Image 1 (cartoon, rainbow, N blue to C red):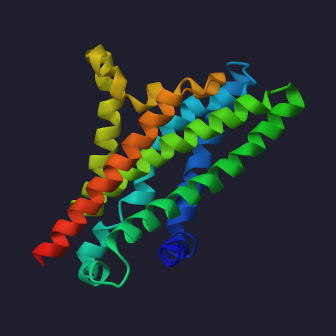
Image 2: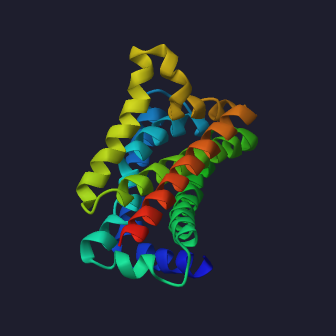
Length: 226
């Protein structure tokens, strides 16, 4: 699995993909940062990540849309499925590599904490709680984006499915409150307050595990058919 992680990291960092994701996220995050500071006069680092969760909804496909769709389109999927490494290792390797890109992005956002520390006294513990929650949210999003990439050979279709699903679980609870339990952004909202709930951690982890398993099942079935 380590070899898969290294290979995927190289594909992110030796091509524009990883830099586009990190750069686009930080660019939009910076705009929200300036608006929040100069318009709302808020100097809380954690509040910025409410906007960060919104950004993540739309930029996650940059990391995930090509994971399996590109292999399928280029005809290299069969080589991937019949490689000595198991499908589980391949899926987890791709998933963890994308997670590392998220960690790099989060590390870079800490420069905003340093800036805010000059103007006020932001809480480091609350900031770490926020980053932890954001990382869990990111992993959940990556797992679904990876699943979407595994069911189509078209990267654009994979990205549309991913964004559409994220927006659905974001807005549907507003129409049907009973669906609020499925809203990942709602689950994230407690982390910027410094509250870390075991139930919310379980929700994010369960969501990620579910779609990792679904991706593995889909690839296993496709392997057995071929």
